[in-house]
Length: 113
Image: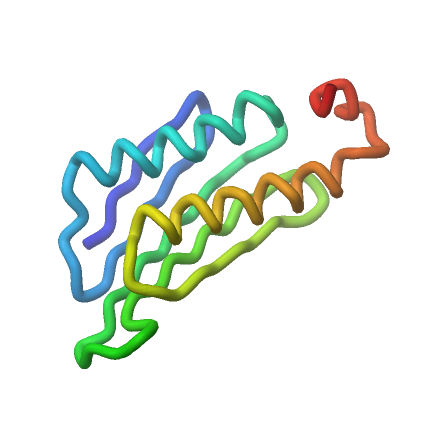
């Protein structure tokens, strides 16, 4: 499944392999990325979400990857596990730390206050 949307002018592409993403979880993804946008408005150009569930069960059968394109480079975070919501929270936190580090000494430093 592939779903392309726009999130406040940011291209949002959600790809899911071996699973069907329901509207509720799609909304949680948009909310999580929206929180990043509040702190880094105008800097994120595109967000790509890649979700995969392995065909055979195991301890890390699910994986979630998010790539955010920002000027100059991109930030990327991934997590594997069993719970989509926990992985989404972890990936969002990793992205936030990367964005804070990237923009801490730039014209966007006022956003970290």
